Image (cartoon, rainbow, N blue to C red; front, side, top):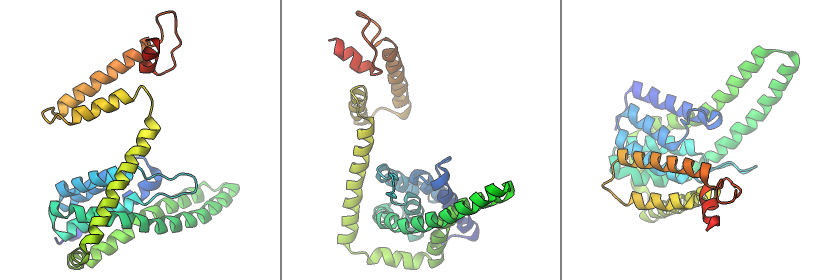
Length: 268
């Protein structure tokens, strides 16, 4: 698929915003489900890009910066794989290949992240001197420089992929052996499981497990519409709030531990 000049500019702009949001984390443009959807919207490939973004979002659940460890670059993986999907012109059929490419792209993006953060350290020292001088104009200027540098970190690779064109991208996708694409797909699926496990580990408590199990049961019922699921979610939230108020306040004045379901279970 060939993109016109306006679409190319919009894709680069989305890439720039995704890079900035990797630091700002305010509008979540760097999240795969958002970045891929926006790229699909401006290129006219909304449905395949939404499927790609949703799949990558599941993988990115387990990616987080912990201490000095830097997580794989979800923004670069989402943007680059979405562009490759669009340029490849394979539609939904190319989603699996794009997901397979996204994983090594995310790891490769670590290098750009480290470079950007190393340069940001020097900018912080410049801002310290500006603060000592009392120059708010310099502080504001260098703050924008640092934030825009994060945007350029994603925009430049996106522009390079767009400059290569659809032909070489298709050749690269077709040249990938089956063992490599299958292996990366399996690896991506394992990362999804790890991501879910990390999220569950953070949320694990007796009060959450019943809702967790109930969610799996409801997900298997295909006849329930989104409106029905929303109504069930609101009902469960109201039930939980009611339990949180009454869980430990009766039967001898037992203490309320903040775990309403657990408080009720402890009584029996």
